[in-house]
Amino acid sequence: MNLKKNLIFLLLAVIVSLSACNKQSDAVTRGEDSKTENINSGIVFPETYSISDDNVTFNLSPEIPENMDVNNLHEVSVRGILNNDASAALEYWGKDKDVVETHELPADQFTPEEYYYSFDDGSRLGAGGSSLAYASPHDQYYTRVFRQISDDAAILEDGSSDFSFASSSDCLRELADTLKMVGYDITFASSVFSLTAEQAKDWEEHLTMDAMDGDRQEDAYKNAWTEEDNAYLISAYQTYNGLPVFNEMLALNQAMAVDSPDNAPIQAICTARGLEFLTVMAQYEFIETDKVVSLLPFDTITKTISTKFNNILSESPYEVYKAKLFLMVRLVTAEDYEAFPVWYFEAREEGSDTKLVIIVDAATGKEINIGQ
Image (cartoon, rainbow, N blue to C red; front, side, top):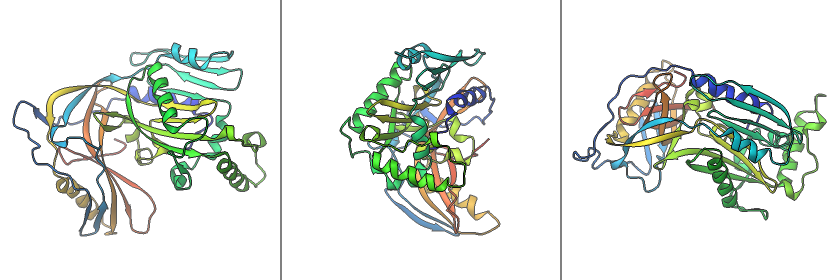
């Protein structure tokens, strides 16, 4: 999960710098008034999609939220990015603790004051502004165990394998209640992985072998794992009307754009001790409009992908193996956002394990460049 120990002090600074960015986008008409004839009437996306187009092979099942009516998908506007309640966060995570260190980041024209606290038990909190991060004194051990979760998730049990201290559903409810308590009144789609203490111990022994070059830091290893250390790893994306939100952070570069637990805007670790770790980045307040988005047929969308790869001079074969419908949010000006449906694709060049992310506007068929 790449849970860096100093993430608590870096997370909000990244968000602040993003909110000061000024990104311009071309004006695009994506919808029409819903009082007119249904402009999407008859649009049906395939359950599976397997075709070849010169050097490009598609072998995928488009991921669309269950029960979503793609023929009645309304445009949404973004009222703004949600800021959390630093006072509520401090009251919740600072209960029965003494603050030993405090840092304050002054407000500016875009964000309110942000605070960073260190507590006497070793836990840390960053709150205020649009992002939040909390880490318990135990998170450093999970940091090492979960650092490759995106690549090795297959070895972990599914979250439906519940622990005695709580079910995965219980932890998801705790997460939802906690988010709402600090100001994030949102819905989200989540993935849950369960990690037993035995698995964690095995992982740590494996990592220990990797570190046998003389620089092992003994205090970074827990060694004695017990049933109390059984943990659920939760990764989640905000949703609106069922669509997962592809936020501005994810579009920074190819690595961050990959749809994986490692990049999820909401990440949490839940144990018998409660939430051991929580990060929240870039959540939004949306307003639905009367306009219905005119979605393009899937064949039209995939033609954008085929054209892109077939125009590459290397002529290497490419496989496109994943497609997922998202609601993308990005800055139009320093203060204004736009939201629109996009198709997220993953592909790879023959002979390479590198994931290539391509984002295509679901209404215009134009590629959205990552990192711009």
